[in-house]
Each structure stands twice: as C-alpha cells, then as structure tokens.
Length: 414
Image (tube, rainbow, N blue to C red; front, side):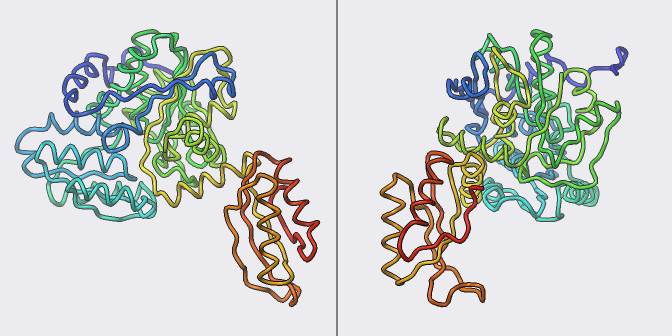
C-alpha cells in the first residue's frame, strides 16, 4: 500500500523541534503502571500514559501550541479559528492566551458543557454550530475565509502531528521496554505523531489504533487503501467522533500504524469505570478507548509490555457518573430493581434493611408513578443497588422478593 517515493508528512526531527518549542508550556505527563490491568489482560506489564493530566486536560495543547507558535506575526494579529468537539478547542484557546492571539472556536452541539466553559475560560469566543463535528468543521472553514482568519486544524496539520508526537518521546524515556502502544483515533493526529517517533526508534514496536464501533472509519480506509468517510456517527465518545481520516493523517497511518481495532460504547464505559476505581483517574470515554481495547481482548497483548495512551479527562461529571453506572451494570455489579411495597411508608424500612444487611449499597430509592397495571394497594419503587457481582446482587433481589409485603416486579440482572 505504501509509496516509497512519497515525501514524509512529519519526521522525527519535526517532533524534536516541537519538543523544544513546547517544553516550557506543556507538562511531562506521568506513566502510571497498573498491575490490575496487566493481570486482567494477560500483559507482562501495562503503563497508562496519563495525558488527562496534561494542561487543558488532554494532549491537544501540544499540537495546538506547536502550530500557533510558528505562525507569522501578521497571521497572529488577525487571529485564528478552529473546530473541535472540545479538547482541541481548549488547546487552541490556551495557546492563543499564551501567544496573545485571538481565538474563535466552533464546537458541535454534542460538546459537553464543561468543555465549552473551560474553552471560554481561556479567553476564546465559542460558537456552537452543527449536530456533528463535520458540520462544525465546515462552518469554521467558511468563517476563516470570510474573516481572513487562520484555520488551525485539529489533526490534518504537520505542526499539530509533530506536537502530538512529543507524547511518544516521553513514553520512550518512561517505558523503554515497550512492545505495544494503544492509541485512540479520531482524525488520526495523535497516533500519527506517536507512530512517527516509535517506528523510527524501533520498527518492531506495535502501534495499534482504537476507535468506537460507531465511528470506525480508519480500518476500512486502510483495507481499501483510500480514505473512507462514514455517513453518520453513533458513539458516546464525542472526543473521537470523526467521520474520516484526511490526507496527511491517512498517509502516516497507512505507513506506520500496524492495526486498528474497534470497541463498543459499553466496553468504553467499563474501562472508564475501572480507570476511576482501580487507577484512581478520571477520564473521558475517548481517553478510555485504549484501555477498553486492552481489557476486552480486542488486541492480543499476552506477555507484552503495553502502553495505553489515556488521551483526555475533560468530562461532564453528571455524564461521567452515568457512564460509570453503565460500566458497573456491564460488570454485573449494579442493578435497577422495581418493587411493589405494601404499608407505605413503613415498608420502605424493610427494603432498606434487606439491602444493607446483605452488604450491598442502596444507590437509588425513588417512588415511581403508579400505572394502570400496578396494584392500587401497593406503592411502586425503583431501586438502584450496587454489589460485588451478579451472584451477590441476585441474593439481594431474592431477599427482597421474600419480604412480607414486597414484590420484585422487574430487575436488570437477567
């Protein structure tokens, strides 16, 4: 598939220059080893490259600053515009603040409110336009032309790719025994920069991209040796909800990336949950995708030293809580249980005691609206119960159903 005569989009020298350029601006993010994830995946070791602890909460400041720092003075004076689902927005906004460049950011409607407010906090003007990223991208390009602003692309840009490649320079220092690295792919800027560095250092290091099932465009593009665009996106991981690679990232990915795999939204929810519980780190779904691939078996990492790049941690806390709950349900550690209770409200005490006496956590207890199908002499309740596993939760449900005056009408364990 490769063209040996094609010029390189980005070189390791470009990444080295970017490293020097951004050294005083970005953090050297930690590599956290996880014995738990190694045991769960069969890997010899697992290192989490925590870009969620980067300035602005993601790796994006690396590429944004590297690109904007190199703009001519007259371009800086006019200002820049960018399109983003949130993380690139914050990277461009902070770079603009540091470089004294006016920034306008166009974000799609699915962008979490936390990302929008953080972007405004760095001084950017934020415009919400488009139901998906591609519509925001088109609007931003039109705005750049109309107002003579420089468009800072989130991934299809040599400076951006080189900046993102600085992640790999740090990774090699922190994890020299590295065999495989797992990297989320949206438009491909991060994996392009990382693969450029790693393959130059050691061609045997395996670079694997990870995408949501509902935004799985990179593998079909590689298989057909041409960019394939998805007609629509369906994933909770808005940070990597792109419809396609573009010419620069496609050129790098097909030359330097070994494989691309997909993960489901449910698998990312499980990874997000376990990262919070076991690694004590809060991540967004896009950042959890590599860990989802590791834990779901999407990639064979048996006895390998594996790095998962946790690319971002900008979350809406309410949504993060809901996704963590969904992850617990996938793990069989959380159940919604509907019961009908006699003797309201005294019957509630029996329900509470039955759950807590069996070592489970009663997360939710709410009275629900009675329907025509409900017994008029019973009060319907919805319970959210957290336990150690499916068997534990089934024992709690059985105990509830055995109580006098309590009937379990439905539950989500089966």
